[in-house]
Image 1 (tube, rainbow over the protein chains, first blue to last red):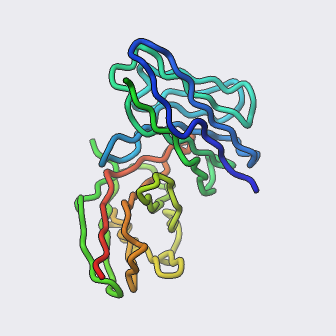
Image 2: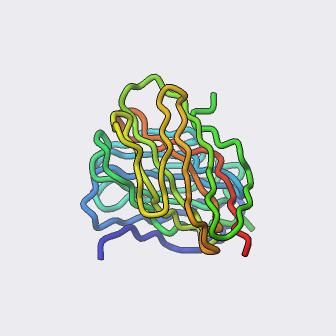
Length: 114
Length: 114
């Protein structure tokens, strides 16, 4: 079945370390998105990509980096510059960002800084 | 400025009764889309219903309906015949811009009482 796979489900990081969250989709979707969710809060956009080798900053991009070398993959790196990285991270995709297609979400990665 | 506003942090409803979750939005783009998602404690985002800005009819999907009042910029979700399994966080979201960014509200936590 087609969908989005996020791995790992749980991730622990020591202070000062970079860590990469994986997001893979087999839906042939053009656009992919990374969101951060803090407890009891809505989702905030970190980065998004409409096509391969191109991506844009969202509302809270500081301390994060992404790449889009392949259509199906959009990994997110949480760098040591991110002051408070403990959060729930969700990846999403849509077939065509300019028309009214729905979005597919992954099951998320819970990142904890220890 | 908040683009999606959900004014009810928490709501209670009796099983089998109907409940309305409020959502107001702000945009100057004539073309936009409005979404409602359900997020259970597992964290996954479950798509419920969609309303396009040019749609003449209010959207319905089974027990879910969207009360779309364009002039008031509101897109309230109505859940009929509530079930215990409806207990979850509910998010209103708006697609805006060429990049297809989804902007989320803060969410409403719905609790269904037996």
